[in-house]
Image 1: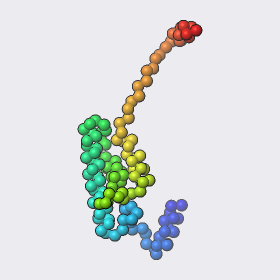
Image 2: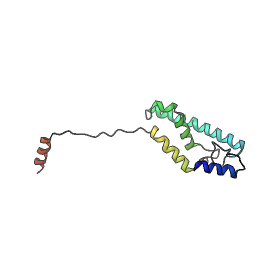
Image 3: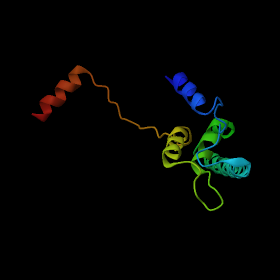
Image 4: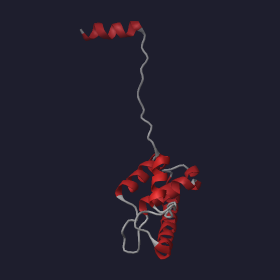
Length: 130
């Protein structure tokens, strides 16, 4: 299905494949692509600072600091242009955040008190309750 769709697009585009690979909708031309690359790099640096601060506080593992996938995905969620508008849509930002959060949020262990009882103890408790 995807191959057929791609072939259909290439046929409708005069035999040329897509040229906007790696850029969100609305980013056209070399000037805007350069602005997007600069905004994405500043977002990466911001993500790295946030992750370092979380690691110092002990909220995330130190292993997550060097993970480029987490950094790139988190950068998608916060990349903005000069005016403060997001380059990516809400759906993409939420998907990126949902992808990153399980790695960054510390999962708190739920402690459950498990009491092991013998059959005799259980029967004694039932008799006492009656």
